[in-house]
Length: 292
Image (cartoon, rainbow, N blue to C red; front, side, top):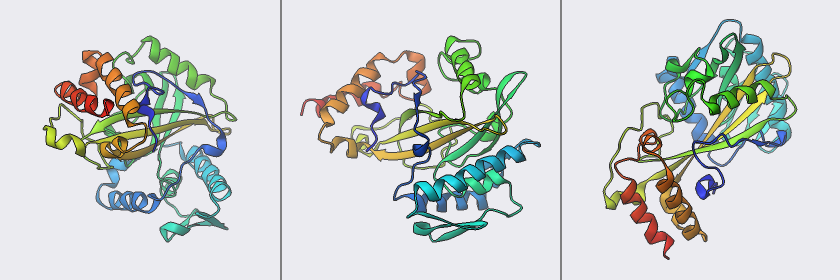
């Protein structure tokens, strides 16, 4: 299990670390259901999962080319390149790379990650294109075309012209093609739905439902495209039940780390994560685990 909630990746911090380019994309045994869900969303709500500014086609193609080169080399048992197509062996599907569809849409059909293209303009970095199927409580059309600092406006201490916002802007400016970076984000949700565009809000749960909570983990990477100079932002979602954390050998330490963080959050931070009304009940549950 990935456990970024162990205190090593604290929320409401930037927390980026250098990433080995070989580890850019993650593939696991849930590849098929993730791709199936992307296909389902493409049929039901295509306008909600893909956007692109005119003029981004070359950068989109650059992302597709990078993935088409990277995936068969990094995961030869999963991806096999056959000229203008890629076979995804465990998913029983063949993806043509030369169709008239937008390249970023094709690229998103290869991986479990969501793909967001960021472009520099007079107002800073903005969301210029995206294939985003698994948002965590935000809607793509509401962020499309917005500057990075405005996208982060709802996040406590990350709004326009805050110290954190300015640091992120400089980090984007200084990102080098040969050195991608990554960070983790996480939250607690009452369900394991991948497509989650709606706000988490102030959800409530009784004691009998606490064990059915899910950690929603986001593995985020940033990579500068060498030709266009744009940045491809990937977001990989993992959904792990709280029960799975409780079964870990270090469950007590993980629970204590969570308790410490929940107690340290400001009211604004708790509200943003939808935990204000249930923080104390959750802490009480975690204290039982920490005492084992």
